[in-house]
Image (cartoon, rainbow, N blue to C red; front, side, top):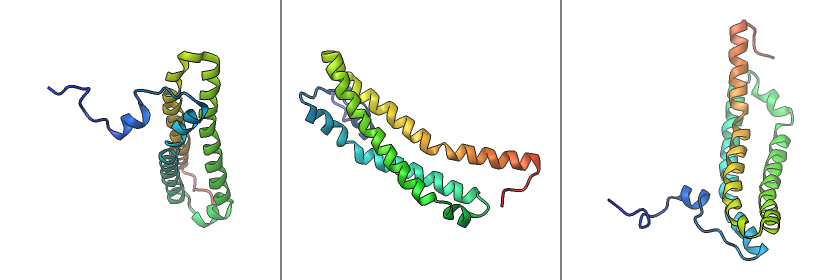
Length: 145
């Protein structure tokens, strides 16, 4: 039987369950968050591409969908997701100021919940689009033109 302390951590464990989080300065708090931003952006971006692909497949006229300002929406969504990510380290700094020594455990939890919420929100168009198509099929209505 292997000792759990000797087992190397997986990338998910290192990313989401940082065992020791005790930054001593605001810069260290921000750096802890920013080291994880690229993985967040890649994950949310991949989820966004999956959602967009699904919508384009399910939409009867993908060219009409592309002409409707979809590109601007994608850019704005990406900017909003990054702004919300930045709120994570801002909340971390504020909680450290309010809670003092009890605050160090907050950042990994904020990161986990924010990450899951962001992925869920980004993937939400898939079940909505599928449900809409199924509902149209059940009701015997043609898809919108």
